Length: 294
Image 1 (spheres, one colour):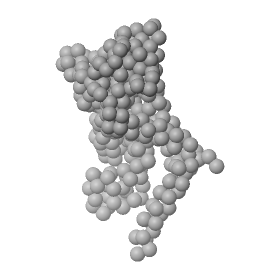
Image 2 (cartoon, helix red, strand yellow; image 1 turned 90 degrees about the vertical axis):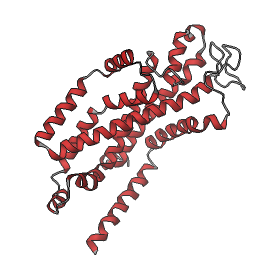
Image 3 (cartoon, one colour; image 1 turned 180 degrees about the vertical axis):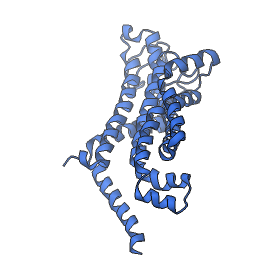
């Protein structure tokens, strides 16, 4: 009975300790606060501010920011704040789907290769190395050029299918070091199958590492999606932060002094990616006692 109840008690202590350091880590608090605020704007902005369609012509062109149009208007008279709100939603959606797909593939490949080893490990490692050296941008260029697939979902899917290798290699290394632990050997001797061992014994001991990996994949997907949008490979319908920058560049907003057209989307992309990186550093300090500031 004592051995059975000791583990949950120990887990509660560890979680309480992690929460204690998390709420006191400025990097983690600031990073997640920025992402949360922008996510709330993306999610509830159209409802709170009753914004119109993002590409609707609502006012005179080239109007500077004012109380009526917070971020001014574009060359065509579209409200920049409206495009910004919808662009945030599209950007977060691309990051979540792309990062989620990459994380799932990375975990399946990494856990399987690290735990099984042998020929399975060699085959999966070879597949990972092949995908790792494939130029992602070139692949996406070819797919868009020949297939004409220009939707947010398909863009996120392609990003996820090409951005998982580095995470898979990292998860494989962590799994390889955990598979020889006593609790894994005990589960194996008890007749527990490989999927259950990975799901119940190995993955929980890597939960913090997996969460930090997803954050990095999320930020990477946001940056890749914005880059593709900026060079003209974004969705044909709707709007995103990258498409806003692409349109501003195409219509010479910088030369015309229309700073309110390109500064908000550029600042938002920088804020999201930068805040995710800062939050990830904060999480590393929380979960790694050696990095905690006294």
